[in-house]
Image (cartoon, rainbow, N blue to C red; front, top):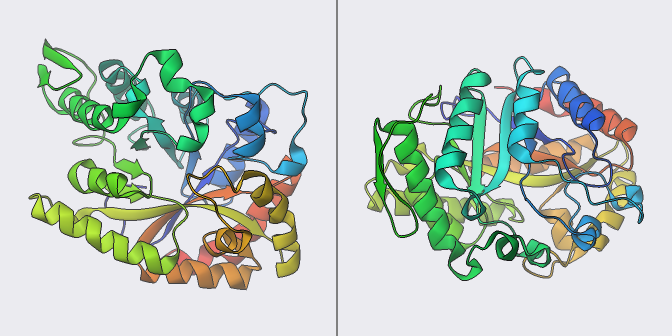
Length: 346
């Protein structure tokens, strides 16, 4: 999703299974191709470097609880290389990452990768940035990489500024709390100017402040349409007070999707995944709340939910379908494409 999205236009990105019970190179490519064919504006991956069997069972970001098999390894295909692979396959869909776990990456090297990927994809990259979900703490990602988890927010902000220096300066110089470099000549620069849109992930006050000061868009999850609108106004006000154009910051949301012609069937197909993972989202969530912050139901119900979010300022949805098989995902994507997407194309 580019930062110049027309007023009123809603864009939809679809999460491909780069992790989860149904991940494989074949599944990633199939879902990406079908997403483009069905009219989704972008395809998205998520990012972590370590992933445990426990998180594989309780933090299901693609697939569903029905697809889990205990004997399978918790495969998680690395985000940057997966998008690079898809960049050579897809012709029109944008490529998104929600979100790069910034403190776990060397910012100079990450900036180089991002710029190269943006050029190789013809300027189609959307980059989510954040610190990773506390729900994944047991993967010990920070500890394994030797990064101080207690100051991960400060590291994230510092590294984002460092990456911006690499993307926009020649030679590039940056002096921060956690990273310093002088006269670094790094090319190519990103195709998109000044850099790919930066979507800040997270729903906390810290994530909102990071968006206001450093982001081009905000991409939270687990917020109702009413709540997200008020928070969005707060983000824009903070940005304006900091001397930025608050109105230029866009609002997205990451949502689970379960769609069926029959509302009861859609909800029945989602409940197992909600039950398996509802305790992993930084706070305890009831099944009713998860239903309220997801696109679960018949096409007409989902259309009403999307319209409510649009009225609150949301212009982008990153969809995470709940599916027991790739075949079932294809069916839901086709139904979503036919009964939902045309209603928000302009």
